[in-house]
Structures are given as C-alpha cells and as structure tokens.
Length: 365
Ligand SMILES: [Zn+2]
Image (spheres, rainbow, N blue to C red):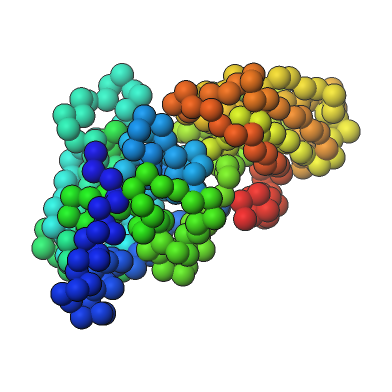
C-alpha cells in the first residue's frame, strides 16, 4: 500500500519550478470542509482515521488507536441505521469535477449472510471528485440510488452529492473519505507528517480541514453513540438498527443502555441515571468481554415493577461501573497492546432530548 509520505519530496521539487502560491496549493491540496451533513458529537461521530503504521499494526495521526490495519481514509458514522434510513447527505468537501462514480450496489451489512460478494467493490457506491493538481477525494458506502451527480459535473464545497448508505465493505452506516494525490493516499489530518510517523500533539487545525471542519473533527478519545432505556436486553445489532422501543408501565424490565466506540484497555464507563428510588442502586453486573472492534455495551440496573414509577418520568440515580484493567483485556484491536486511558460516559432520560444532548456535549467535547 502506498503511504502518504512521498508527498514531502514531491512538494519540494515542485517548489523550485512553480510560483509560490501554486506551489503551496499543489503541496497542501484543497481545503476540506465536513463531507457529511451531520453534527459530530451529536448526530454522528468520527470512528476511524487513516492507519499511519506501515507495518502490521495500526495507529492514527495522534499515535492513538482510532483506526485499523491498512485503513486508508476517514470514517464518519451515523449513530444507527434508523438515521441512515431518514437520509443524511454526503457533501463535496471541496470544489471540483466529478471524475468517477458508481451506484447500484445494495445497502446491506457485510456481516449479513445475504451480503453479495464485494468483487473488488469495497467502496460500494462511491463518488470521486477531481480537485486539480492531482488531488482527489473519494466518498464511499453511499446509499444505493442516492448519487445525484454525473460524471463531469462541477461541484461546489458543501454540495450534496449523495446520501450515507451501507454499500460495499461496511457494517455500519458511514461515509468513508479518502484523500489522494495521484495514487498516494493522504491523511487529511496530517498531510505533512513523514511516512509512518504520528504526533500526539497534532491537531485537526493543522491538517487540510477548514476551520469549521477542524473544530468538528477535533480528536476525542472514545465517543458515546447511543444511550437510552429499553424494556429488554439489547444486542449490539439491536442498537445498530436503532428505533429501540421504549419501556412501558407494564414492562417487566427497565434496561439502561449505552454504546460507545473507540474504547481502550483501562477505560472506565460510569452510567448515571438521576434519582431512582425505585431502582436498586446496588444492582451491578460485570461488563461483557470486550469485542475485537473496540465497542462494548454494558447493561445495569433493575426496575422495581411493584411501583407505579414507570408511569412517571425516569428519574433517579444509579451507577454501575465497568472497569477493564490492562492485563485482563489487553487486546481490543488487531492484537496490539493499548495504553490505559480513561473516560467517563453518562446517560440521561432518553425521553429528554435536551438532557441527552447536554450529556453528549459534555462527553464529547
Ligand atoms: Zn473507512
């Protein structure tokens, strides 16, 4: 796989022959705006960066683990398939001309037994935009039938080109953005870093992003995707599907759930609901084992069905803590050791969108 790094050499050569302004644009590429019409940290999340590790391991531009082996782009995901079905636009990140596109690939998780063979079409439905000087952006996993540009079309920054789908090699709704110059994949967060290098202090603002996108895509360690209450224990697939039915006064169980991504060994999740006299605050259960993709779900709490509380708003306080110690579960991704790091997740009444939004903001910023 060709790594971003040949860029520095090429840029230096061009500097000799071209006027300064041209050399700068050719070296740095286009300014990129957010390629999706969602609010990062509220209605979508950045799940994977470019893998900068040339070997069998994986590391993102900050030397973190928010990537996987040989991943060549940036994945920005929706919170669940219900959001995908409602429709979320994919946007041109910079002005340019549509050079290639594909449509017609079905929206189906690669995990599904019914998924067709990829046949080299890992991108699924995709659009490639040529920005000049060899720079292009590619948008993958678009919804079948949603591509609304034609080959040769000129597009402006922020112009909707399609909608987020589930086509190609994907198991959750997201747009995968690849930035290339020629045949070289460029990490838009760190286009100037040497091949294989990462920098714990690098920021999105020093990448190719415009100011608004850099702010939206600022690095966060871990993100909470979903929180809510359910009347039954949920699987990860249930949460991915979205539209989880809320408990009713007759529900025998009251399940609080939270799904988070990019967890690392040693992370601690604390779930807090405020103030439940009718919930046994001592109810705890150990966290399920970590899953290879680094996402886990925790379930805790127990409703007192003898009371009439379910008819009220869900107030109360209950905490459960799932602590994953380095050593117990050292390998969450690609069998590589991960440094211990902690973050806290909280959740609120799922029927209080304002509270949930505030909690998410507090968590993700
Ligand atoms: Zn991707």
